[in-house]
Amino acid sequence: MPTFVVEAYLSIAAEALESARARAERAASADVRYVRTTILGDDDTCLHTFEAPSRELLEQAMRDAGLEHDRIAEAIEKPADDRKGTR
Image 1 (cartoon, one colour):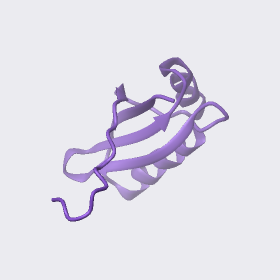
Image 2 (spheres, one colour):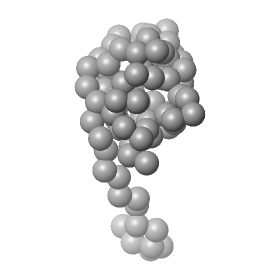
Image 3 (cartoon, one colour):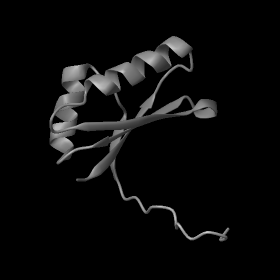
């Protein structure tokens, strides 16, 4: 299933961050999986990660949850190399 990163700019106030995370969790459904929220503190940026079959399904889930955003990008992830002793 594709992974998407949803970017939002918001106040770094603790209440705003918690509210954004809670709305992201509400966007989860049978088709959309909420993965995590990452805050870039010095940048007023909030990144929500979701897995969804399509951008359209994710956008609908976000609208239903009232999750405002500035951008959605499909993420291509490469897991860390699991070899031990490598830096």
